[in-house]
Image (cartoon, rainbow, N blue to C red; front, top):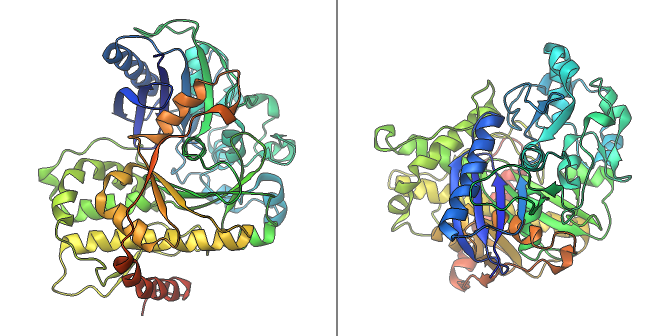
Length: 497
């Protein structure tokens, strides 16, 4: 059976895998995400070569997904002018805060609000502090774009990536000249968009074990690719993408009004096929919260700490750095959670670096109520997991009210699906049935499956298999009161009392 390759460039790891045409994994490689473009490309090359060697043959197509806002300026020869500029790098916060734009008008154009993680913020910072970089920049490339460029020699992007620059008009499907002008840029410095199944080009780079000439496609933004592969493709569906950050995605029949969307703190992204809007509400420090707690609770001397995103000043980057370091401590998690009784009786607001949705509050921080002397480290970790799940239920309910479409199920994918207690809590807290995608990496598999339809239709991309998490009515009933307490606390200014 033919094989397909997927690449997922994440905040913490670069994942490369080869899959059959139904999404079953034949081989996979996971490496820590490097800080610089040459290191990133070396990791991708090694991953592709390693997967081809393990599978015993070349894939027939390559699909690429990844984080959107992280990118790099390239010169005319395609060389990077800086290390990777990360989405969690706070540089640009002052410049974007000073942006003289009406929030509702900006949202109507871009589907989002001014935020330091957007590439526009980084460009404004470069203009103010390192103007030589912008003067020498021929192209801006998000990391999926840069990988595809290195593989094919052609620079393209996908609309789900372009839309996150804060300089893309989601209504017209093109870059906004006025927003780019704020940083002294023009549309020609941004890569043109290609569809998720439209090949960027043929493989021209030499990769051991991989046949030259096979098509390479940019599947899109990681959350969007995972949701599509999970079968969340139309209004009334809802996906929950778990990782360092967590994103809840709900396709909508029409874009929301800017006022309501801004008040709720959700973005309005293009769908992967460009046919509709997808509302996204997130918890930027979902997995990061558990990683941070593990760092506090597990002795640093008993664990190996891998490198994470480059350290830069500011709380957002510290949270992300802690998240990367915490990956090495996950081996202790099963033992810590073993024997924990649910619900824990501890109420945690899981906001390590502010809250984005459904009630935006940049100053909100982690709060803990009900912690007693008899509780263990495992209880506290489980309570943090409970907090993320309670928060996601709140997001789903608010998105349903905004769209007027009540979902029939919640489709969950991502790294945390491998943590049984997390899925048990998720299913018990959710007001709708929870389906768990049976894939070690739904985004990587989704990118591969999308590449398998190169030149064809996204509608023909197979849906990854998922299984209904067994219901536990007694536990669901037990979480009714904690959820009401959580809502009352989260909606209260100042947090628990």
